[in-house]
Figure (cartoon, rainbow, N blue to C red):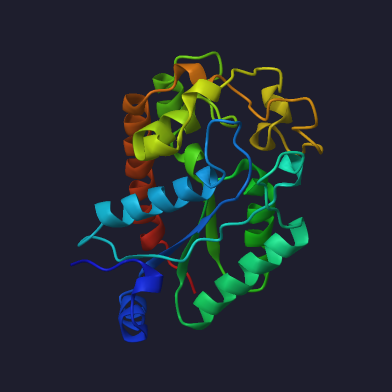
Length: 252
């Protein structure tokens, strides 16, 4: 059986993956409110699911290790809602730096940060720049950015990209973990403009979801498990293609 889950492997098995120049994917996400209808681990669950899917797709072709997920991220803009657990920007950055530094010290030279939470995006990429300045080269990408065109073509609502507890995330959860989704409590909320969302511009301000808001940005009413399956397949396929290219990149 192909092994690619870091925490389920013995040290010699991990060392062997290093000796074969494995790509290490570090899933990064958050624990935060996702409206009333989705579980609070949606973001980290998706990052890990996509990483594992790519590792499986590349089995026998490109050696891939999926590292233990960093489940808490930068989510102070969700703290008005119960269930959110957040790190500060500085703490989140330092956690990423220290984990990546351990991997680099062990000899891994192709390390990819795979993000599933918009609020992490800017800090994650800034941390990658800081690591690069210290001679530790890493990649950093948010999973839905890998399949933006495919997602836009698959969704039916007004918003053609990922929002929050939206059509895309709800579809993915309906496909992967329908038992944790309560569509009876799902609401549509398009009042948060895309430019206020973390990936909508260079800077956004706190809090995005303040008292009196729904905690949703998008239209989950259009969500379906079939759509979630198609979105997941597109993202995994594009991540696998990205990892193939990344693995060929010479890194000192």
